[in-house]
Amino acid sequence: MFRLFNTLTRKVEDFKPLNPPKVGMYTCGPTVYDFAHIGNLRTYLFEDLLQRTLEADGFQVKRVMNITDIEDKIIKKAKEKGVEIKEITEPFTEAFWEDLNKLNIKPADVYPKATEHIGQMIKYIEALIKNGLAYMEKDGSVYFDISKFPEYGKLSQLDKREIKVGARVAVDEYEKENAQDFALWKSVGPDEVGYNSPWGKGRPGWHIECSVMSQEYLGETFDLHGGAVDLIFPHHENEIAQSEGKTGKKFVKFFVEGEHLLVNGQKMAKSLGNFFTLRDIEQEGFDPMALRYLVLTAHYRDKLNFTWESLEAASNALNNLREEVRSWDQPKIGCAEYEQRFMEAVDNDLNVPQALAVMWELVRSDYPTSAKAESLLKFDKILGLKLDEYLGKPLEVPEKVQKLVEEREKARSRKDFKKSDELRDQIKKLGYEVEDTSQGPKVRKT
Ligand SMILES: [Zn+2]
Image 1 (cartoon, rainbow, N blue to C red):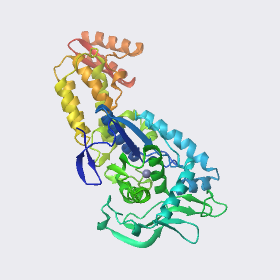
Image 2: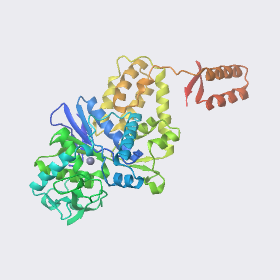
Image 3: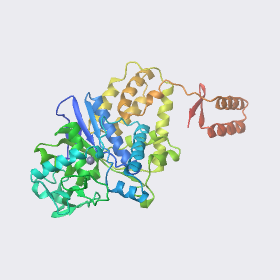
């Protein structure tokens, strides 16, 4: 039985979807005005692990992730550069998909774009006004009235915060500590980017798009809603208010939010110079999959501290694993005991670090490599490290490196260790490493 922490109850609960084996899963996607940073990518990696675990447990996941392609930050950037919105959003949407692909994150089934659902958003807001939960201001902006939705605050346990009744917030960057009426529709001037509506020219608020697009593709009530912890309030809280305010039905069974990634123990910020994208990681010579491995080493509800040293350690561990499985036999009957322990770990609120430890225990065990291979490939359906690309595939050493290795063997046999060390350095410069074993030299990639 898969068990998962539910932010709605603050408890780890049995995961029972509405219509098993089907699972509807919505995750808040990127605002495409810049490259995703590694903190965003950690969230998408955690959601990928969640989806893969559900699938390993026999569920059929329908995954929806929105693309926010109209929002204050996008409009500001387009204005600064003097270009159309699309000239910002299209290349960064492409870059986002590239990042997911490099990290072996499974694509969602649907990527709805905000700009393609404006009509549905207007109808949704009309329904909220009809239900007495929203009101229009003189300027043509429409706000959600939180005082009319008694359950407001149930996700973020808002009774512990200050509620500013009657206060309003119109921008997409919200104050974190105060609850206020929030914009569903923001009126704009005649020369600004906007759409025609019953309330005049304007554009939708950020929260409304997630209510509209999740329900459009997953129904009024669905199983799982994911994101990062900073979305609990106000974003997910506001989604609940809008959705349950409109339908009178429960919006989502499980809210699940992943913790932040820190850099050198600090929150990432452009001003601190600790703001990294996947491109920065590649520029430092790392395989993007090293970041995936690093994310596997921390539980999704714990903060993960990124340092270049921790990335290096993850990269080495991944490399060791890849090199280890190259000499393995083809998969045959697996190791049931390890497979059971692995699934117990991931089924227990996605305890991937523990599952990773079980995997390493198996790799180092005395089981035949054919059995280890069978189980490892099963594990990798969840871990997503693409180990099938290495398993049973001996390294193809370039001729140049092979010649140096042979030369070094000759030097060693005549006990010329100075020459042998020099040749080892040369081999290293080409990206390979020689290990002297009882069966002769073993070459691996570094
Ligand atoms: Zn959202």
